[in-house]
Each structure stands twice: as structure tokens, then as C-alpha cells.
Image (cartoon, rainbow, N blue to C red; front, top):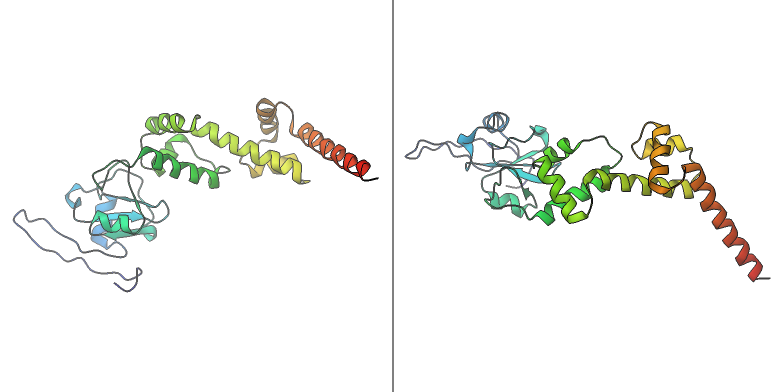
Length: 221
């Protein structure tokens, strides 16, 4: 195969069980796509599909959310998907093994670091990473010391503090940028987590900076 954008046709062979085998394809054929959409167990072991946007590969029968076909790549064997850097789905276990929980949680954490300002639930997070919501919550808390929601809140507050200290952005804009559309709710939440309002935090931070600058100026005279 010289290019991953090439598409190959399915080659059908019949063995004693009259089961169909498919060669590796860069993108899913119509037959393979129907198997993925219908979660057809008859195709398990015949091919595996990987989703570029999540970095995960699955069996055709996996009950995870149907991916965008443009993001799907097909492999004949699970080791091919692994060699391309895709991780096995925690739900359908296409490699026959469980993904180490530390690696799974690290992947979730990395995604949260880049998407904390978005809108999602524990359910959609579990679906994205092919796991059970309760198991995800429990495992994440055991390894990180906090739930996914608490971790996202921490990320949002840290970003808000950084912007309050370093920019002139209005509090309403900062709230929006960290994923909280209601400015009043953001202010109350900030006060609860940090111990003061966003406006007060900005004033305190700048007063400290001003006093530090005065001390440096006085010491140089």
C-alpha cells in the first residue's frame, strides 16, 4: 500500500464455516461500513476499524457511537492498528486485552486538558473513550485523586486566574472562554473555589505586583 488514502475492494473467501474475510483497506468499503453501523458480530475477527479523531480501534460489533466515516481506517489484524499507534477500545477489547487503566486515564486527561472549555457530560466522555461512565468516574478518581468534573473545574479556574492576572479581559469574556456561559454563576463558583470574586482576585494580584515593583525600585536607589 503506497497511500493510506487508497481504497481497496473487499475480497471474499469461503472457508468451511462459509465466513467472509476482508483484506486491509485504507477506508471502509460499503460492506464494512454497514457492518460497523449495525455492530455486526459476524465480522468480528475479519477486520478492525480505527477512528483517527479518538486514536482508538474497535471490533465491528462495538456498541460505541458510530464514528464519522471520514475518520475511519480499516485493518485486517489488530496488531496492524497497534503498529499505527491506535489504542484498543476498552469496551470491546479488540486485542483481547484490557488497556492499562493508567494509560486509559492519561488519554482522558490529555483530552480534557485540550477541551475543558467545551460542553460534555460523564456519559459522553465515557462514550468517547469507550468505557462505562461509572467505571470511568471511579478509575479516574482513584488515579487522579478527583473526579473528571473536579479536574475540569480545576483547569477552568486555573485558566481564569491566569487571564485575570495577565489580561484586561472582562470577567464575562473570561467566563465564556473557560466554558461557563453565565457570568454570575462563574463569579459565584470562582468565589467558592478560590475564596474571593474574580474582580477582587485581579485587584489583589495586581496590588501584590505593584508593591513588589515599588520594593525593587526603592532598593535600587
